[in-house]
Structures are given as C-alpha cells and as structure tokens.
Image 1: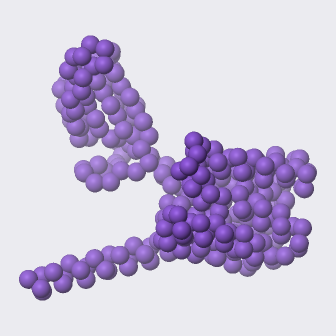
Image 2: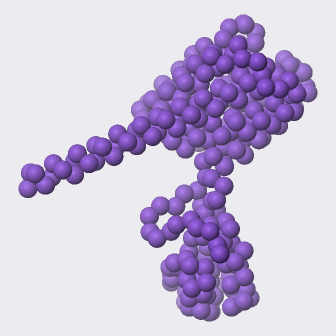
Image 3: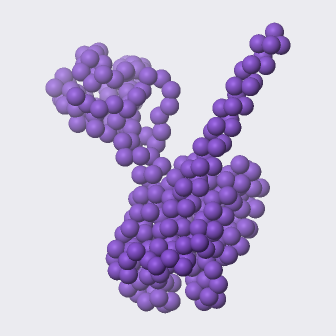
Length: 295
C-alpha cells in the first residue's frame, strides 16, 4: 500500500512544477509585452495608460527618473494589500510581473520608438499593452495596483471591479490634458479603450464559447438535431413555467461562436416559436466539449 501511494504523489509534484514553470513563462511574456507597449509606443509620444502605470509615467516625466523605479515603488503598498486580502500566490505573481515590466522599461528606454505618429502609437501601443496585461491576468497575476484596490472595494461596496477601475482612470487619463495637452489625452483614451478590448481577447481568446438554453415543445427533435447535425452533446433539464406552472423541458449545450448561426438555423427550422437564449462563457473545462471547425 505504501508503494502505491508514493507514486501518485511524485506525479502530482511534477505536474505542479510544470504548471508553475508555464505560469512563470507566460507572465514573463505578458510583462515584457507591457514594457514594449510603454517604452516603444506610448511613453515617447506622451501617451499614458491608466492606473498606477499612468501615475508612474507622470512621476517619471516630472522627476526625470526611470519609469521602472516608480512602477515598483508605487505598486508595493498595493502588493501588500493583495498579499493580506487576496493571497500570497496572487501577490507574488503580481510582484514578479511588475519587476519584469520595470526591468523591461529600463532596458528599452534608450531604444528609439517605432513611430512618432501619435495615432499609430496609441493603436499599436494599446494592442500590445492589452495583450500583455491579458496574458498576466490569465495566468493569475496583475500589473497594476488599482486592480487590487478595485477587487477589495468590490467586496465592501456596491461598485463592480470595472467601475472602480474606470473611476480611477477617469481622473488619471483626464489629467493628461493638463500635462501633455488635450490631444494627447484623447490619444490616451484611444490607447486605453483598445487595451481594454484586447485584454478580453487575451483572456478569453478569439474563439470564445457560448452557452445555449432552449425551451420548446419539440425539445427531443431539437436535441437530436443538435447532436446529429451540429455534433454537440446536449443536456435535458426539467423546469416549471412561472406563469402557467406547467412542466418544461430545457435543452442546455455549449457551442463555439462559429457554430451559433447554424444552431439558430436548426432551432428555427424545427420550432420557430422556441425560446432561445445564448450567452458568452469565459472558460469551459471537462466533459466532452472540444472546440472544432464546422464542415
């Protein structure tokens, strides 16, 4: 019995170590991309980001000291909060990401920007920034202390994490007009919006999954058609109508975005009056679900 229990423990440790290495590599890549977006595109064109990064850019501009110094120093109090309130794994992942980002900005600072066109800098800087931040978040870290504050305030206030971050960034990005000019403030908003959208793409991927709920009197026919024509497994749930009190059979399944149009066609053909609800899913694990192409 002892020999049998020792073997699974060894395998478990190897898996954990592999996951840790993978996490460290991807956080490194995300933080490095953040540094590229800042020093090669945004900062040389006086375009700022939100949060602690934006405050660090201001501080570096007024003191003429390296940006990386303030990225670390200004994030330390928030890292302490994250360690106490969220967990040490998150805090150490964030510290690792911030240090890589700070070192990256220091090494890239002497490098000439790829463009001095502020619009191009805002667009491509925002894209690279968003991808970098999204990768770091996807693998359990953060690059900005305001996100930690937002998570903590979300627990004690009625405001969402996004609303708290937006509140901070409204003042930070708006103040760019007084420091760098109002045209740079508008370019900063463009970069911020693009980065915001790219974060979602980096976290969720281009081929996001969707949950589907169907209520129909022809639930069996629709379920069989989804299995045979769409190649997706379905689950039948039993519900009760709120108004009529009648028993309802609910079909639940998960599809990819490219399968949505075909699913709607199947449902429309079999029951034009069926109730159909489709929502986005951030992540799908387990079961038989696999993303695939439609032929």
